Image (cartoon, rainbow, N blue to C red; front, side, top):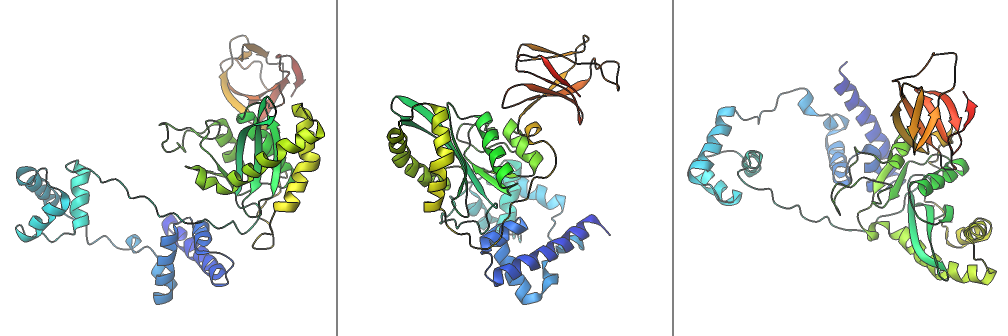
Amino acid sequence: MKRTVVLEEIRQMRFEEAYEGWQKKHFTQEEAARLLGVCERSFRRYIAQYEEEGLESLLDKRLHQPSHRCAPVDEVMALLRLYRSRYRGWNVKHFYRFYQRVHQGDRSDTWVKQRLQAEGLVAQAKRKGKHRKKRERAVLPGMLLHQDGSDHEWIPGKRWDLIVTMDDATSEHYSMFFVEEEGTGSSFKAMKEVIKSKGLCCSLYTDRGSHYWTTPEVGGKVDKQNLTQFGRALQQLGIEMIAAYSPEARGRSERAFRTHQGRLPQELALQGIERIDEANDYLKRVYMPSYNREFAVPPTLEGTAFVPWLTGSLDDILCEQHERTVGKDNCVRIDNLVLQIPKDAYRCHYARAKVRVHRYEEGGYGLFHGPRKLAGYTGKGDLIEPA
């Protein structure tokens, strides 16, 4: 059986599950569409087809028959010659009227527009802005988490970044701590705390900070192919990353930060806290449990979407990884340090071999050749553990 046919059958089964959940009001149309990997409009179209013609109507008919709308090359070239010779500079709608009336054209206006745009004879119009509407909460804990940082004067004369990781379904805070400056290390630390206490989530919603995403153009779309260190780590863990393009898109976390900025400075001052380690201890012991008791809400459905983390080392995933080529002296160089590879029973030396250096959040390095760890090193480059 062809792979495309198998995928169609799987899509049918997944649609039945999503449709049943929507009928029983376990999911909204938006959540059911997300399970299928389509937009909400496509899911509504599937519903109409399914209720009118049954499950077979969802099969892609293009798999079994050639398109009857495929135009011959001669017809396409004739259309382009006509536009170039007599109607150059006309907009598509104006040209299409003459194409129908004067030249007896029987193709659709969309077909004509796409042919002209593909040839570069007319420019594509700017896309209309999307209709905005309130986004409902995720229905289960662990389906969608928010992570963000807030720069604020939490202590008089001292500005720290507060890093918060919270659940979209319940607004419960799973991780909360201060750092001098938000970055890759703080994001790794927050995700490690969440995974150790709760497990792996389905997706993570973040802003377009440079430690989360690579953005080729200022204010433009993120590059989902050129991953940052944090993006690579979450891809290894199977967690989907979602980029937010405005503060309004992160409304729940933004409102939570307004609450923290209105309460935390007063509480820290009341306790006489001035150092960042004391502040983090207070957050963990007192403030975060108190905040969750007051502001967390129950999820729509019982259960959880978290998956327990059972195998492997989180430290070797949630860390910076850099590829290096071993020198002729059997050493690797990184951060102005020289890491000497110790003897092992597998190879005489690793000269010219490609290896991977892990820079850990707590300090120190790990050296890997494929899946095998060759050695560990201190932050000064001293060998601490042969494999």
